[in-house]
Amino acid sequence: MEPSCYSLLHAVEDEHWWHVGMRRLALEWVTAARPSGGRILILDVGCGTGRLLSDLRQIGEAYGVDCSPLVIELWQANQTSGVLQSWAQRLPFADATFDLVTCLDVLYHREVPDELEVLHEIARVLRPGGALILRVPALPWLHTRRDERFHTQRRYTRSQLSQQVRAAGLIVERLSYANALLLPLAIGQRWLGQRFPQIADAGDQVPPRPLNRVGKAILRGEAWWLRRYNFPWGLSLICRVRKGAERGNDEELRSDNRTTSLPCHPVTSSLVLS
Image 1 (cartoon, helix red, strand yellow):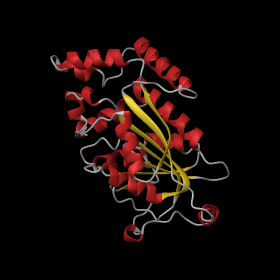
Image 2 (tube, rainbow, N blue to C red):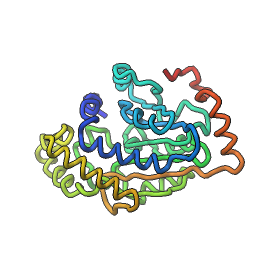
Image 3 (tube, helix red, strand yellow):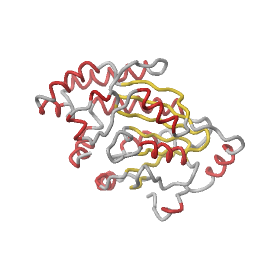
Image 4 (cartoon, rainbow, N blue to C red):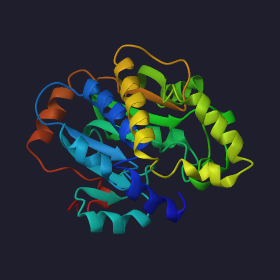
């Protein structure tokens, strides 16, 4: 993202209907994918400001990585712990470390030249039987000026995302569009935004309270719907992915990591999780 986008994100993500609603939706998918049992380890790849980590820590022991040096100041200001500056293509953790990984709005980025490389790396750090919750922008024909500001390299169709996940050797358990009900409004805003830049940027700010409440209610309704059904269209795609279980190894890995500190990849073992 452009540097100004990080400060903007930090300023609005606790109140803006899109951030609140999409975070709620993602957490419902995380909860549904959570392995049964005791303590679980969670990794948020591309954690940005680290806001999601506080919610993930209600579910398990959560850590985050992000490649941007711009977020370090935000982490320090917010006293965010358990975060590392790292590229998603080279995660600083040992094989089969995490029970669950989230990767929300990361693969689309122009700093990710090869999204398959990132998916392979996530698969490496996932334990056998572990889950990945993946979210990306949808519908390539919606690419606009706003995407350029947020360094959007690509938007996906359902089949494109499914092919990438399967190419990484992972199993697609569920795949749906999301942020669906407001798609017509978003199309109109993007069309007008191409002609009037101030309209394109208006969606980044928290709207007046009544409109913000309506937006939150709509996404809350979508989260409820997605507990059982999928959407055939939407501004985003969300996917629940599973790493195939390796017979005989899963329980051994789970037992070993319950009693040890978080293992780091040998190349980056000097990094400290504060």
